[in-house]
Length: 165
Image (cartoon, rainbow, N blue to C red; front, top):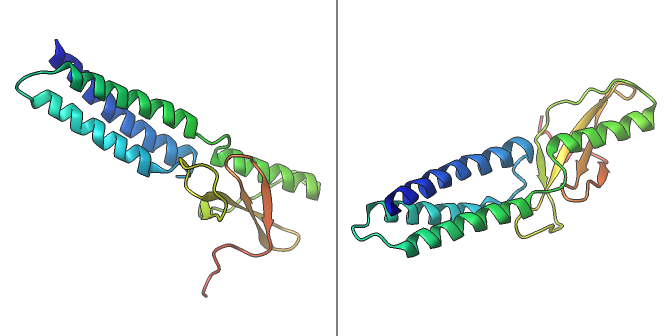
């Protein structure tokens, strides 16, 4: 019976690992710090494998691994920023449309995040969403950064990443 539960927790840990990485990099452009979660996921995988191959089965391993998995889920839910990368693009385009009285917005593909000096949370990387809007009137790209926690939009005077060409 305990072997079955060890398998369940082991498979759940692998599913959590894939889900957390997918959500972080698909929706939040990697702003969620993976150091904390990577360590806990590795520890959970270790206890899962240890519980599967240990000759004498122990309930303690099940409870510890179950607790680690519960901690991972709770902390990940707490770590999720209020705004996704798509929300940041929407905030920037809404601001641009309201400012320029236009209907069309062209948003070129840029690096999704830039480093930030401000510290939001110990569960998040110090990164801001980075978006650009092509301004047809001035024939240039207007660069913005958006805070993933507060949704605060800041217009940059020049691109964060300067081209060397």
